[in-house]
Image (cartoon, rainbow, N blue to C red; front, side, top):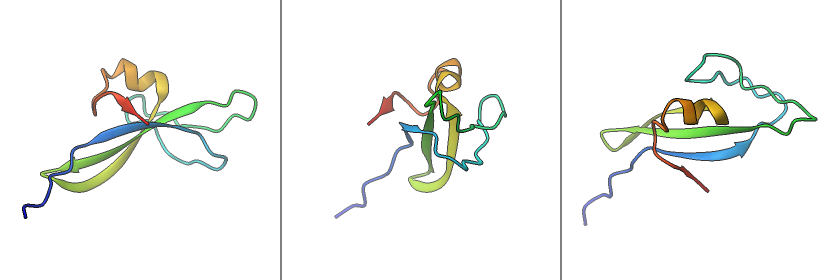
Length: 74
């Protein structure tokens, strides 16, 4: 049976305290703000069917970047 090729995908998640990720679109930190309950987009990026990296985006930056890893999933 052939191995199914993985595709890059993006999901919307809460920003956790202590998060140290940088936005792949604007380069600014994706920071936790207690009162704002901000969201981030996390994308698992696959290259030639193999996992390569994770990229983080502010939720609005992901839209500004024209959803580079497709529509946001659950």
